[in-house]
Amino acid sequence: MESAAKSEAKQHEEGSGSAESSGGGGSSSKVYHERQRMQFCLLHALNNLMQEKESFTRAELDGISENLALTDPNKDKWTPLSVIWKPHYNALTGNYDVNVLIAALEARKKKVVWHDHRKGASSIDLDAEALEGLMINVPVRRFRGLWSGRHWVAIRSVDGVWFNLDSDLSSAKQFQGKEQLIAFLDSILSQGGELLIVLQDE
Image (cartoon, rainbow, N blue to C red; front, side):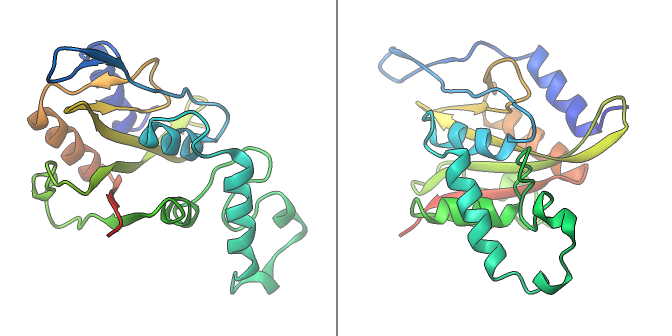
């Protein structure tokens, strides 16, 4: 059984257009979109957010994770399995946590703000000059429901057009206007998803 959030993503994929956007001048530009590999969804989401291949690398995220682990207050409670399942990531498959996301973006002079669950997505200023994009974290089930976890997804505007850059999708999917984007975000929030706003740091 799939999560409701994943079903929402599938429905969005079926009703969306191509991975190209048309700018105000009529020119089209390719939208960069990385596909899912193992549990490296945060790595893919960050590169999709930045719209650049290898803007972030596995080595960089691993290094950030290791640095965070050095100051882990629960380090004395680690077990032998902590060599693989480390506090902020899995050494084999990725699965990085939100602390890695925040540290990685701050290293690129970005500021990450948690969206208040008590407010709808319509409270987000999608036209803000400092807005870099959005990161959502959604519950997912895989392997016929035998494994459950969380999945990182980047949402951003390219040439004035908003795209769902979910690495589980076959290609970037265009939102048909801000109203559809807001409805999508509200649906994610109502199903236990988290929403983070990424801004250019002043």
